[in-house]
Image 1 (cartoon, rainbow, N blue to C red):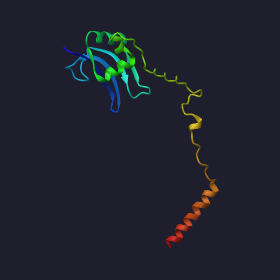
Image 2 (cartoon, helix red, strand yellow; image 1 turned 60 degrees about the horizontal axis):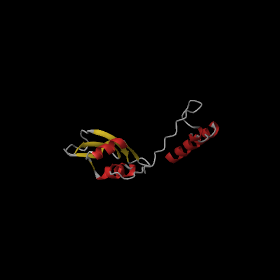
Image 3 (tube, rainbow, N blue to C red; image 1 turned 45 degrees about the vertical axis):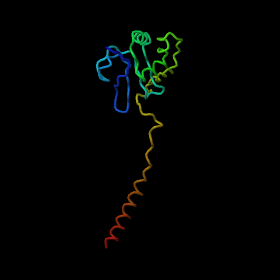
Image 4 (cartoon, rainbow, N blue to C red; image 1 turned 135 degrees about the vertical axis):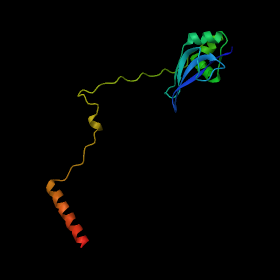
Length: 143
């Protein structure tokens, strides 16, 4: 049985997310896997690459063949060189943590600077005069 280390896709349309899995070469891309050893999220900036180095090196040592895409990821994490006995260096950029959400003091999530002020309305007397003049103009036009 030939064992491959490959990517298993999940996520939404146009938002690909992958799991790095060890699977039999005859199974489907998203089929049953022997073991999941990592994650790869290419759409994040920088790309999120998390691979369990110990398990990846074990599977490489027992003869599992990585696909081209996984080989690139393993080179970035340094696991491919470590499995060959060479000096390995992890060159993956760390993902910054999201800032913690701070609840506004007043209990409202709408910020005051985000609210657009309404246009000032004309006084009631001016509005009544404008309406009367419009009615007179429409009566003259009808005659």
